[in-house]
Figure 1: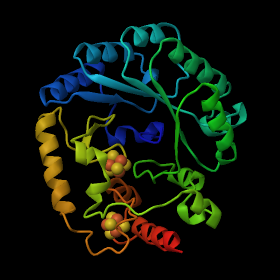
Figure 2: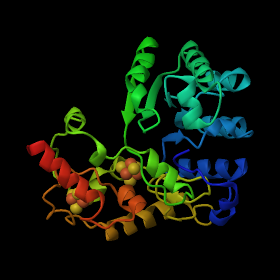
Figure 3: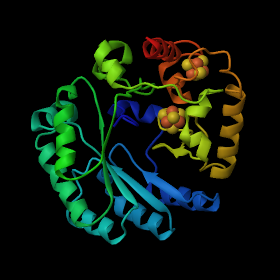
Figure 4: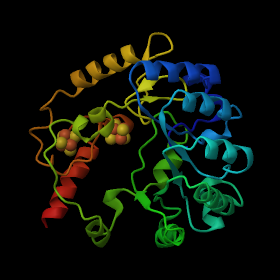
Length: 301
Ligand code: SF4
Ligand code: SF4
């Protein structure tokens, strides 16, 4: 939901959901452009009634597919389809370790039971599974229990605190109230993060694996972008993925020329990628860049 959540009335202002035919057309363009691996995510991709049509076409094209889902719908015919055309991996979100927290975070009853059923189905189908969890105020007290839940299934769990402002969301205030900022952590919790210096960053683009590895997103409304947290508005259905990708790289290189961060004293502690700057509406050296400076000061204490 972090990627695309929009209130009903706001959707039309920002485009429309693509049809199955359009997604399949984009898949063909992606193959043509040399794309090998694909992540299907959402929102929750399995809620689309035409998911089987899109998934079947994309697996027929030969992509290595990683599927991101909350697992709550992975049963019955959908499970049969996915087990018969297994993705290279499923990455599944875990929002809590109790039904109460699932209800608080996701607004549904019975969420945890359905997710556990999904985990067991994926394990039975022998598809590699990784669990991910975003730690927010509503579930932070259950972080240990979430880790135990993953351990009970023998599964790896990655967790992040990284919740960005959502520039396209009319509910930004709720999101901002849920997130836990580095600045809000106690000294002990900051120590737990084990922040260590890394290689010097010469531009925010150095932080981005997508930029480094030639990756890109096609968003729900068909816009090509560096990632889901930005809406860069290139329209491959009007031109092509190759053309939009080249234009995007030119624009990013112009916006963040190599060396633009060389004067930053915190550049070995930097976590400020282009999406952070975009989402938080800040310029280089401001906003989240100040957090990198705080991390440096804390680490050097
Ligand atoms: S811009 Fe940031 S959030 Fe987006 S893919 Fe790159 S590193 Fe990830
Ligand atoms: S903290 Fe900001 S200015 Fe410093 S290296 Fe990172 S992006 Fe550049």
